[in-house]
Length: 135
Image 1: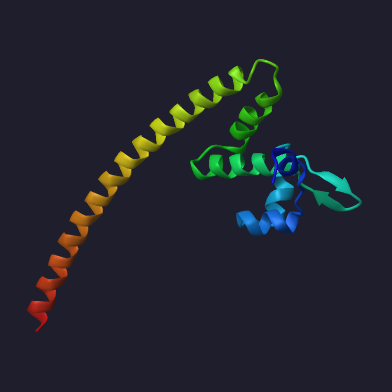
Image 2 (image 1 turned 180 degrees about the vertical axis):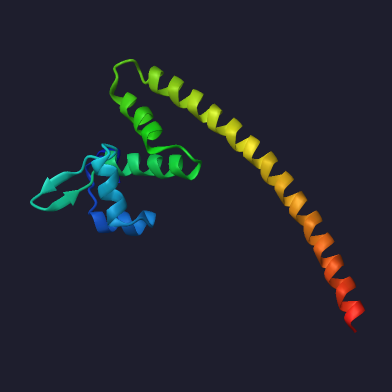
């Protein structure tokens, strides 16, 4: 399949839903928010290569915790005639900010896990003590 063939291919809403394990409602929501822009044939949505690529980026962005508004901001810069420099700078800055936030969350999560493990040990010890006294 040539690059031209790949770019000419289209997908239905159900095909994209199956491929990416999303609901039709989610795709319609992304369309409503201006993240996707499928063509229409009557009531039927027809997604092209660009829509599919944008969906991949939307799902990646959501997976790492970006808000839809942030994803849209990054995607909307794609059409500027600056060789994507603004888009890449914005994406790099936002990704680094998100990475730092995730690292902070990881530390907080590790601390919470350790605290819960200590608490479980104390509670299990108390339970064991009570069980022995009751026997």
